[in-house]
Length: 265
Picture 1: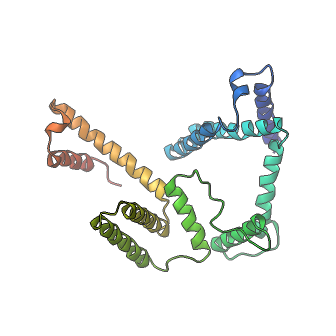
Picture 2: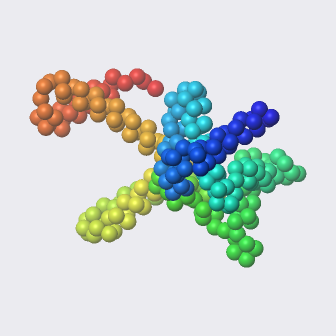
Picture 3: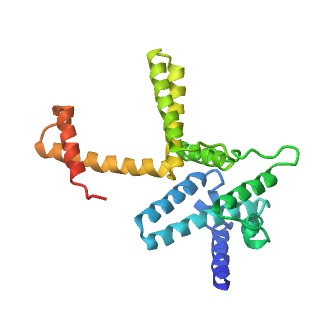
């Protein structure tokens, strides 16, 4: 623990030096607003490193992400708002407070009860006695839409607002497909947009109900599509003909070849 404390203290000192009057011009120019894209980019690079399985890359990317937290804490320290120690203390206190089954005398039967207790404690923290906070409030508005829908549904499910069986989820999905078709038949653009949104939300529900994160699944599918489409491009380029010279059936045949050439999982 002493080694970790020394490492964090050194990082804080380095960042403070970079932000000092005689520090780095670029670092001194940064604001909380200007650092937002950096924060998002670093978070996604951590995810890429996790998916790659390369622990050396993960170590580096976690460091870059930690820098964002320390850097923004330094900016707020200069504003006399708070500093990194308050950030670290705050999250440590929150973890202790929301884990009474570990740091207190509360007993739980398993993960489901842990999550229920977490939500109850969080609601008590965020809302007053007269108006407790909504369980679906506080989800970051800048989350990707699939991830946001997933989080909303998870929270509602933990409150007991959920389907009992996967067949019920599929029934709702088919209902939304029919409503999209109906809106298209009426050629009502606003209804079409609304019903497609409902359909996407229902697809997320299928994924969530089966224990999958739709954001991850769609990203995997995008990577698969890109990989196969690039194989199609290679086959087209090998003929010396332009892409438009091929029929859809011919391109689809190339696609199936690319698909067949992938290793079985």
